[in-house]
Image (cartoon, rainbow, N blue to C red):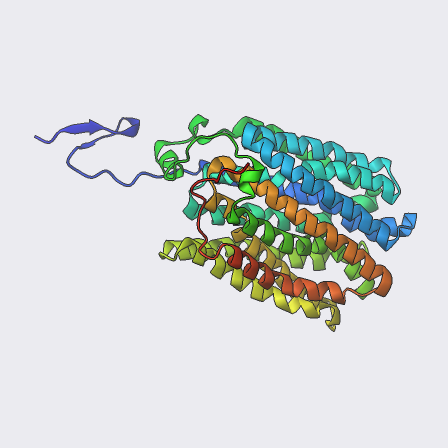
Length: 440
């Protein structure tokens, strides 16, 4: 007589019959959804000011270089904060780290209502940047904790698409608020959304082994790549690895382009096509819808290649090459004969950026132990912010001196191919870190 076993939920089956495949569950995708929402909120908060820039510049007489300084100091604080939050999140984990980051930036965001000058806005933007610098270290650390390598780039692509959703929502929401209740209301109302997210995050997020809703099959999938426990490695030892420098170089070269799009596109459409607060919303929405598609497809494509047996490094770099080629036509955006041609060129560039970054952002989790990911992400964020600082000064100087975006778009079109070439030269085999060298 065949032996009987009692399965999950009390179900009885023949021991000699293979059980049906276990359903892996979906808790990790709920976590991904929360990360997506956090990125949306982060980008709404950082984009309120760029959307209002033409209005505030007219009301309070801001110069182009003055606004460039606001962006410059935002980037400086963002880069330094990236280093600190990367290290902090390695110590306290993404749950508390993300809640702390959003709490800091929410207070700074709502404090914008008390200022009128570029100097005053610089002060609160520095505090906003300090909090927002924890966004990606916490999100990428959570992805490394909750997703195996074969799903990680796809998950990052999904929540990274939140940047584009935030960029879509902001030019629709902010003008409506500003026109109805004044520009200050845009900072207050959007800040309140963050408080709801913080409460949900603290209630729901736990490490996989501590999560009550996580089933055994999903836990086994997540832990199919076990990581050894170890204290965070010193920065000097991270900087002794070519893998860290490859990631930092990529972020240094591509992050400034994305920041330039975020901070100057409303102004570009205002100056080049004479659109105002009521009319540049739809072009911006169209651009960031395209960027959203690029984010998901970039992560999906490399994950699909991995599923077909393509080597990890080759899959990531092939996806990045395709994304870099899509960006190149943006060099001609200033010469576009109409607003919607410009939208198409810039939208493709934003899609290419997001597809490229979904794979570049996978590099720390691909190549480093989980306990070092936050610190590596912090170093990359610092490098990206340093590049963004230089680009902010360059953009302010170009616009103040020549009044044209053409030099900015030419730089943007070439940056991604250069970034891919540099990262490949530094780490051609996409080799993971197996041990850290001793550095005095």
